[in-house]
Length: 307
Image (cartoon, rainbow, N blue to C red; front, side):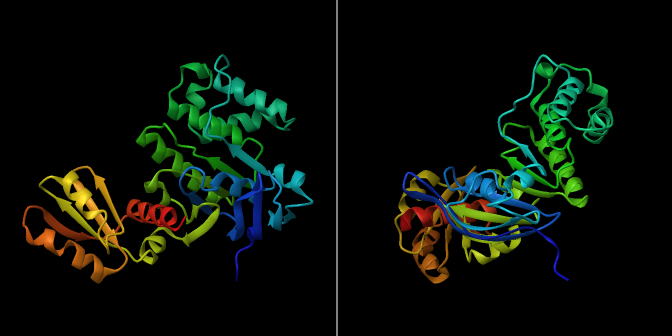
């Protein structure tokens, strides 16, 4: 039995200044799933997410979000959304509890005190409820923002680079909470620049220049990229990188700490290109499974080359 769809759209296109910044998006998202949107700045991630949820109207295409028509029922859809922006936008001179109570009052929510108390407890904020927001670290501010975004018990959450500037421990705790929300049936759309976070999503959407170029689980996206990758250590890696970049069969070369990752989709051509450098015995070469970072660099380089 197919899970009920939170999003079912086809052909979504948005045009600004005579140019399609997002074009021909087809997507189905089951309820209670976490979908990550990955791509370079300007790839169309945020515009796509906003169209999917009726926050901006597509110029072509259509479909449904939470069972409502994107074009004619956007106001109804918005009432069931929670939105957490990248920029923190709460009040530093109010406490955590006062911020949440203010949000509940602005939106005229019933059971305001109950909702605030529940939000404080769920995000581990109860002990800090009376602390002024201006004194909070990035991780605690993030918890407040998520609490405020879910105060009205939305059916869908939109998260725009939600962990930007947050320490690794707080990022892990944030993602644990997102999975709890998804387990409760909330659908989550999240844009991220952190490749390690893609593994925390049920599926990812890889975007470039307004198009979906691949999608699926993180493991499937890596597997379907068809990359062969070599890790190289030792010697002058910067000089080696410049020698390898123009070679036929070498699609991308990228530095990762004291390693170079050398990748290509034509295994035989890549082997021929790197064979003379392996024979010099100056560097150590080791074939490795490609990472999501390798795949990201590969797709970005490919679209630039095609453009």
